[in-house]
Length: 232
Ligand SMILES: [Zn+2]
View 1: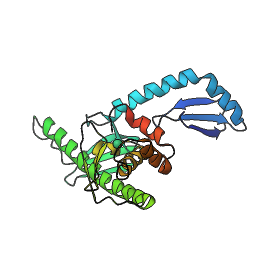
View 2 (view 1 turned 90 degrees about the vertical axis):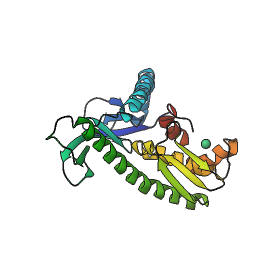
View 3 (view 1 turned 30 degrees about the vertical axis):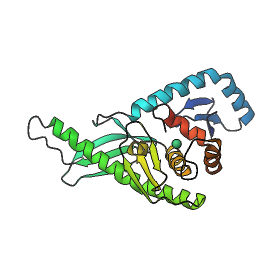
View 4 (view 1 turned 120 degrees about the vertical axis):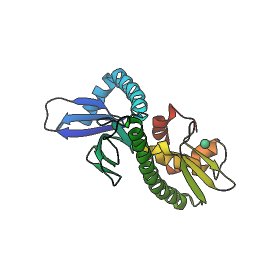
């Protein structure tokens, strides 16, 4: 079951929402018993499950949006940011609130520049995603290296079509899909942990999953977000 996150507010009714993190977010008036909230959730179980399914499909659809047009949602670490492009000679991407400011050297003085501008934005976003991914994945690999007491020699981040990651157990080299940077951090952690656990067990045996569960007891929740599209 997905997590139930309760927030108490000065309101009169109880609201239940399924958010893109696939958890059940409840807003309830102060002093409403948890037991009562759970009863309501149980009563609306069918509706909640439907919402989770729809949200899962929506996630995939939203996340894979390729059109970099102003106002579109761009995903980074499981959150969506509204794209706003700003014409600038110095290129950069800055997140502020839920807006992604893309400073990009686009041209609007010539005709037929649309494709060139589109490509420029794509390249800029990919470079930024990769830079952020390398930084974060490196930190996570270090975290699990010390927890698991194993060593990863090298890792690369690249666009993979049908995998989240792979592991060369001889060279102790891990490849991670750049696409991961769009997903929530616990989903990224699961993939890194998964690939690193292959350095102990190269297969998907019971021992392998026991090792994964040892370091991430709730790994199934992370996997469910990624599962529908790729096999690992
Ligand atoms: Zn595997």
